[in-house]
Amino acid sequence: MKRATSKEGALSPIALLISMYFPPEPGGGATAAWNRALILHKIGYSVFVISGFPSYPTGKVIDPMYKRKLFYVEKSENFTLIRLRLLPLESNGYLRRFVLFTNFILLSLFWLPKILTVVSRIKLVYAIAPILFSSYLGYIYSKVTGSFFIYEASDLWPEELVAFKTKLSPVIFFIGKFLAKISYSLPDMIVVTTKLASQFVTNNYKPNVLVYDLPIGVEPSKYQIKSKEHARKVLIEKKIIPHDLVSRFIVLYAGIISKVTRVENVVYAANKLNGKGNNISFLVVGEGEEKTRLEEIKHRDDINNLFLLPFQNTNLVPYLISAADVCLISLPPEPIYEVTVSTKFFDYLACHKPQIAICAGELADIINSNNLGYTVRDGEIDKLVDMILSLQNTPSLRETMEQNSYKILHQFSLDNLAVEFSSVLKKEFGKVK
Image 1 (cartoon, rainbow, N blue to C red):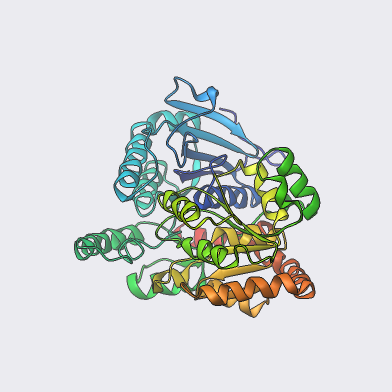
Image 2: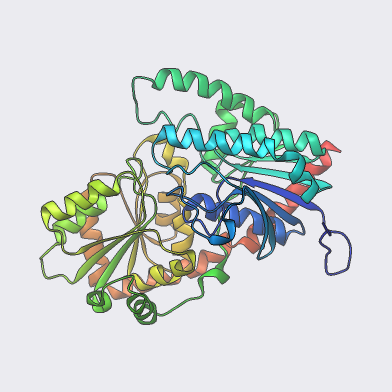
């Protein structure tokens, strides 16, 4: 394969990004992987990506171009994608996810000789997903290719896995802690997504390499600002949302619907405001194992101001966010999630939307210190309702939060993050030469 060249005509160094998820798949994992690939591109790499065929979260491969294929190479924007066909399993529950993770790892190793005929002279391996296991896979690829290895611990396992205690939690934690310690000992550099996560990994695992906090960030050009009216018109024409919402005050939650994300908080808030003549509607856009239960609650309690939509195509996400008046984020209340900043925070920020986050820790600090919205704790439904009403009744407050979002957007733009990351990466490369 012909190698990419820079504007000056010189051969570009090659980076291999390993991520089970990648757009057009929905979800934070795919978004994070695309952002990392774009950062690597911005700092001068020719980026190749190993990922699965687009099938998250249903496990079904819809696009006909993948029909009867097990291995497929395609060009997407600035990247070359090496796609592998995974088992047709829905990403639902710990067991199925573990099987899918294992499937991706084994296929990536099985196809390694063929992958290295597609991409050669790799200078950097960047492994991001699946969680924990990608460190082992990235290490193997880096050793085979003699390249610098970065492992991104975008989620902290086993701590997050055992946050919701079960009978097997002690065993899982013991084994997981052992595997995690090994995974942090393999790379030449570790990337996490927040400052608190960097402190956690450093203090608990004491790796011998740099632990660098690189926010997920956002590419503002993907979220060209659209007026609320125009965005709603487009969504109504495409029959994504009903015409009744054209003049409503819309509160949006977009993301995974699981026991972890506690989206029932949003449903309970909608129920409290239902039928009160406040002109407020709630949009919950996403999939997950808890969605069926939320649908049952909606029908049982006749919550007419709540609309549950499936995941939408990624090109519609800016329209959904632009159509909203306020955007919601919901994180679990367990302490380990205080080191997390949701990918959706950056999407909402790029559209300059006021945010209400059900969270604590680093995300709460960012929102509160920059006056981007409000934060509330899990289960504080009355407080959540009061915050929504406050934003509905105070347009000037919403405008201030929108302006504040615009002011700090550059801090989290991929251009800015790329400049900072490039400087750090050059220093770390120097240490291993």
